[in-house]
Length: 398
Image 1 (cartoon, rainbow, N blue to C red):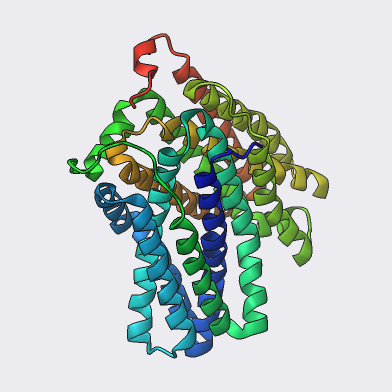
Image 2 (cartoon, rainbow, N blue to C red):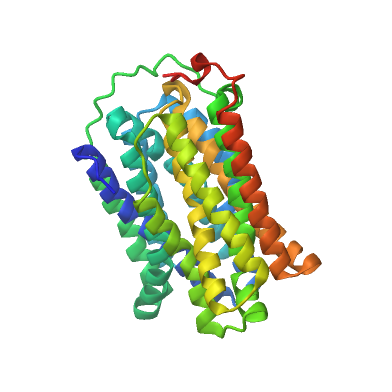
């Protein structure tokens, strides 16, 4: 994996490490804090709902609207507000009617920040370095998820959930400080545009490559998540793993995704990068269907779940292929839509994974999900190579 030499990009990655570690750690610490203060599991569930709802509507609209603003200053503002919110929650024993709206405010900022950070990468990185930049960003995101939850637990144990949240709030302020040192040299004029969500959806629907990438990403992420979400059930019920074993089985998925992203080939044009991701998904899904569908032994379970982790790598390949095609005037809004679709696929896949296991059993459900992945990926390859698509249609839109 190559890190682009751009100083601006490396500064942004440093800020991403700080804010993402703080974000993932804060999610766990926040649940612990709310349960500590209320003793009510339903309130903890309400907090979890508040954290995800903005991704399904308000966050997309705000991301589209923010396309008319200066991205660097917007990112700094997002980090400062989130940092202040978490510091306040950590230091002040707020009543629930105040606490929940503050959590909602921080949650609403998340999709706006993520969409504009993705858009800023396009602004500050030369086109030739963009694939490597997305590869690095994807690896950072996976590593942050792996480390963030553990860090949240450790900090909560050492400092109490309140102290952990206050420290996590400081991580957002550090991110804002780093972003302030980024110098955007893009000359794209967005001052006269009126970005909207309809522009984002229209681009994704009209561009053949992007349309294929979005559809296949949705299906593969949902199918892979259906298997990943059932790791505890599969590990204990099918191959007889203990608690430690099922934890390791679940952890091998993001670990395999991280390693695969780091080794992903990013050379070639948009079409070639997307095809590489599709072939990887097929190559991983077929053995996963055999190993997990057979439920042979513990070794087959771990190899099968590692293959599931490889499938998630396709999202990074799709991001590389689509990201630099997005028109500048609707870049943040389109990234917001894409991120919401991935989130929806993840949620839907987790729900369907449980339903499938109940209906046909864990082994059969896992095999079906992997066959769906293989079939959708092969269909994607067929669409990309269809002679009905002219070379002109595949040309960059920006």
